[in-house]
Image 1 (cartoon, one colour):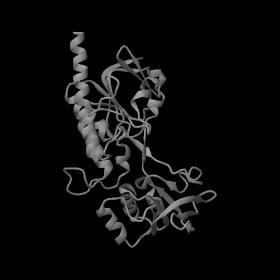
Image 2 (cartoon, rainbow, N blue to C red):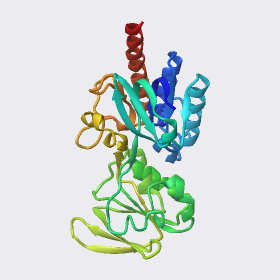
Image 3 (cartoon, one colour):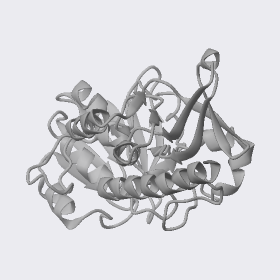
Image 4 (cartoon, rainbow, N blue to C red):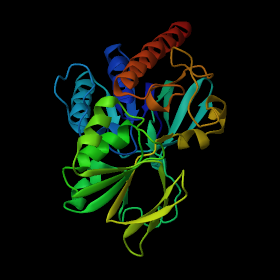
Length: 319
């Protein structure tokens, strides 16, 4: 049976939760749909050090829990473990179909896509075969499995550096593999990496392959300057080489094909509005964003604000 609402928000990270908070505080009836648990990439972050209002680091899960409680207190309806799979536009309304066809579509006047990102895969030989068997993309999820064991971290940005530092709580030794001759991360993280006795930085190198039959046994690393190949015996590989937009719903919805760029990110104007009237995007899925929690929250507030005025205009015209 179809459900009618003012606004649908797809994605339950900081952008989606902030959009939901601003929408319901503005008097809109809003439903947030999240295919997994709330929080997105934030819940995989052990310490968030740069979110305003927290002088000490805050755990990502704790931060998301506070955002959820705040939004729910004002009346946001949240559906978790429910994937929004396809969107159709009919008579200026959005029909969102979820993974439960028996429910029928959720019909709304406006929609905010806040799907976020997914970890980007390298495509190295052995990566897919050994995923979940020594290959991981989440230090918070899997770090404890490698207590007193030797591992590698692939990447040189902020995420790779902060996750490597977190993994020092468990691993006996960490090989940080980075293709450049210096870190791309913030100086504070780079300095901690270089000073940490458990971390061995392997500069100018790329992951050539991940070796092992049933589980990870070693990796082969290639020096990009000398082409020398080195094998490192270890038990786990954590890959942090960036993120890719989580826009499967756009691919499944032909009417939305015009809103993404070549990389798959959603293109909007400064009000977070896409080319399609009533359709907005916020957070990491939005093209050109500085991918930080505080920016995602700002996007969520902006998208909800303009969605409110769009819906109010529709209702006023129909009155």
